Structures are given as C-alpha cells and as structure tokens.
Image (cartoon, rainbow, N blue to C red):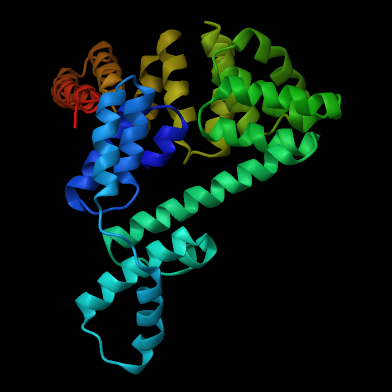
Length: 323
C-alpha cells in the first residue's frame, strides 16, 4: 500500500505506512531505502543518509543457502516456525531474482510474506503499465487508461483519455458515454450534460445513464429536472446506494421531504462524515417526527466527534519526521 502511495506522490501517507511496517518487522529489506527516497523527495537529504545506512546494515541475504534449504526441505522434518522464517527468506530471494509470478501464485502466511507478495504485485503492475506505454497509441489503449484513471478517481485524466480514444474512433457512443461520465464525476456538469442527453436518447433505460444525467442536473442546480432520472435509476437497481442518496438530495431540494426520508435511510451506509444523518434529522423535523430527529442528531454528533479525532490522527500521520 505504501508503494502505491509513493507512485501517486502521496509521500506523507506512504511514510506513515513504511514506519508502521518497520515497527512490526525491523529487518524488512528495501523499506529503509524507500523511506530514504521519501526524505530526498521532500528535501531532507541528511535524513535520507541515515536511512540508507540502516539499509546497508541489514544482514546480507544469502540466496544460495536458501535455495539449498528449499531443495532439502522435502527430505527433512523442519519445525513450522523455522519453516515459515525460511520461506520468507526464499520469497525475498524470488523477488530479487524477478520471479514475481511465482510469488503471487503462492499462499502467504505471515506479514513478511504478504509484504513481498504485495511488492511482487506492484512490480507486475509497473511492468504492465510500462508495456502499455510502449504500445502504439490506439483507441483501445486510451480506453484502458481512461478506466484505470476513473477507478483511481483521477477524473480529469480519465476524460483526457476518453477524448484521445474518440480521436481514433469519432462518434463512438461508448467512448462518448465514458467521457460524459468522467466529466460529470469531475464536476464539469455543463459539458457533460449534452453528451449524457445524447447517450440517453440511444439507451433510455440504462440505469447508469439515468443516474449520471440525474446527478449532472443536480450539480447544475436543476433538482426538479433531476428527479425523474434518479427515480428511474433507483427503480432499475435499488441496491446501488449512490442513486438513493442523490434522489433524496433532489427530493429535499424540491421540498418533497416525506419522499426523501426512505432514500436517506437506505443511503446511510455511505455516510462517513455525518452529513446524511444530519439531513435525515432535518427531514424528520420538517415531518414533525421530533424523537427521530433527536436520535439522528445524536448519531450525527457521534460521527462528527469521531471524524474530528480521526482527522487529527490522519493529519499527524502525514507528517514526515526525522529518523
């Protein structure tokens, strides 16, 4: 996970995760070097030298010995704990030798084994991205990149790649739909709207398109226009919580409080900051249900208090401190 944060240039969270890993397993090879790299990128070259020295002081890895242990294990009884320790060293040797597929194919039993397995996955992903970058530009390559960016919530990058895909396949309805959704998710509702309306004319029963057009209209402060699209999205798949949440938002904006309440209740699992509980409390108040309003406000305050503590803890974790 820390490696992923580094690739995204989120050095504070990566530093925190690396430090947690070292606290649990101080001999993990490569982690001190990774911390040193974060120090250098954040302008602390003197701190980096300290971490690099710690990396050099780790006991050397003798892969020849571990290969012999691997071969002899089938012919001897080895205590389980020693076996796990030896296996962790063997996995590390496999990683150093570039045998990533072998590592990810095996079951991990210890934190150290999970660490090397995760690094193997990251290395395979890096190789895949490198291979992707080497491919000649095409609609398919940009489509794949757009989907990857969208899954990472990099909506502007996703929209850029959908646009590039459309250069290879002008008028492609699937690419236009992807572009529209990426634009809307990124807050560019004005540009997304005509593309979504065009897509809706081709697929009027699409749950996804109904949701995104409703979401876009809501973003444009056109709640009344958004309601029918969001209603169709909820009817099409009541198990998806985002349409439930946004339909409730639309109902509240047009003053249909009673209709909003059941959708707010359904969407509560999405609430990570108390916003939905507060909105539900306000809806209960307007509906004259004072006891339910009180209960929701209590829950809202609990979440706010917890969120405040978590925020302070998170902010603390972002600090890049000396060795």
